[in-house]
Length: 82
Image (cartoon, rainbow, N blue to C red; front, side, top):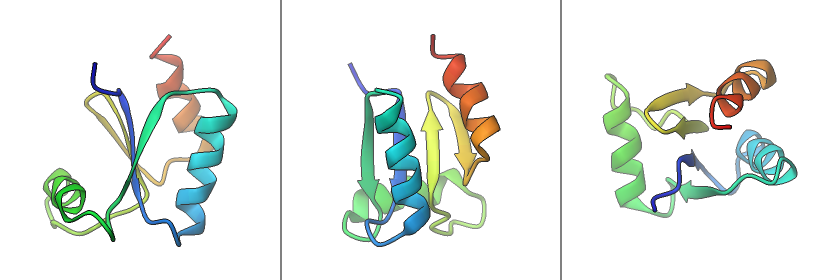
């Protein structure tokens, strides 16, 4: 089964690391996609946005797209997974 939570970001990005830590600390299964190293993931991220920019970090939870979400917004959408 494909993972429901995807984190599009860059290894060097402090906000990406912040979200990685949150998801790990919550014990959630997610996939990290480094858009600077993986051109395929970068293209998938570009398609999510009308301006086709690499807007990261972006978290997708199923069909929901969260661009640099607040902790509150992220928790709200993660709650819906339960």
